[in-house]
Length: 426
Image (cartoon, rainbow, N blue to C red):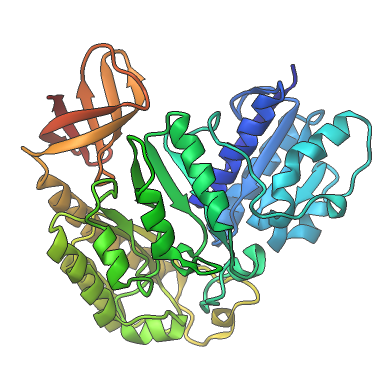
């Protein structure tokens, strides 16, 4: 039995694709091993959204080329598109597999072991040709509904490495989700690059969400990430459905209208606030999480203060903060008034402290309330997973099972490493 190891960086879309590929290899008699162990094949699914992402990806590549010189190394993901020539120039890397060909990884590796010489250009190009994820790395089942983006935000390289927006056929998605539910999945996460722009034939995003929620089975639906311009009355109504989780990752990026315009974002601070207020009018404890870019070109002290105030006003449950990183070929690369790295670091630290205080305040409201926890990890009699609001919960009980719902009363909060809710089984 041959062995294979994966390392995945970046977004949930990468995580989904790795889960599907790992399942495919295991279904064909490969053994999945930890990335730090000896393996016949190493696959690094890279991210290139920031300089830090590139740095991490290169570190993992170097780790394998130094320690496991006799193994097959495949580098795929967004860095494989963005830095293809550089990566292909390295003799230690056997294959550089772009996103369009990623789903053909298994056939490439099998051809290698069969002594065939197959160039990646000969491989099938299909961004949706992935199988099930039942033997992947996650308890929750991610389903890809869309890929690529047509927004061309000035800071973003994704349209260059993921291509233009393309939606997966409607019935393929429904069949895929029904299959994973029938196979025992308890939480389905729909993912993509810009899923709110899903459109296939006469079906739009809210039509797809409605169809998923109407499927039979004991499951709940989570939406990975949305742009703030993707809300209509029909979608707002679906947020009250009992199978819909009360959580959305709603991408903000800045609290300044001036910077949002410079970023070429498709909304204003007012429309963002209006969206949050509409949802919380339906469900006051709804969990909004977001992304914030610090140090975008031209960010003044006033702009930064606006971002800090916006986090406090919206009471986000979590904020993913990252420093603006120049990406070659984007419009923002050519913008004047680039912010010094030292100032980006200082502002990031300030904003993170504000975000952590908001996270603690948001999560504190659940003490004394109930969460329906999907257990993902078990250590003895200690179970850990996420409640419906996408908040980590830990509790103690006997005979716990993974991928099972438990109703838990929240008793207190631990704040040692992360803000963790501690509960008691009902």
